[in-house]
Length: 140
Image (tube, rainbow, N blue to C red; front, side):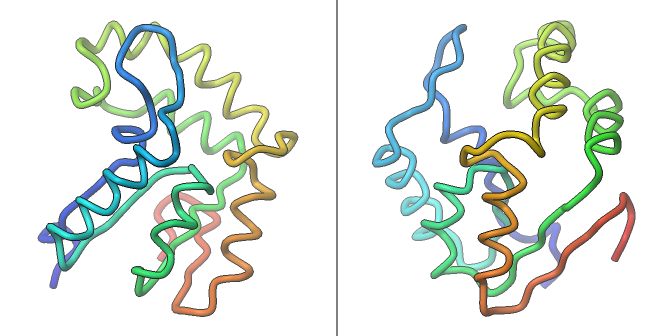
């Protein structure tokens, strides 16, 4: 089955409370949303940087891909990303969030939370199934 025929879940859509100030949802609520998604879909792709949510879905996964890019490439990707209407009401609203996003990305190697390189490497290293580490844009 081609990847474009698989159901897609962006973890951003289940990780945050509705509203203008970013606030994480309770892990139990996000887990419930994950369970609903998994129950409704046989073939899927889940993407996101939430180690706490990724741990919950690992037992159901057949493969993981770690997009392990240099921070500079992640910043370039953030600057070039198309409008994400499922996250932002307008392209301008998305653009207004860009400085915060770039600051957040820039701290990736220094953080010690569920969004850190260390957390992602721990998941990747411990996963015993099929796994791929991509270290540059367009790498296969």
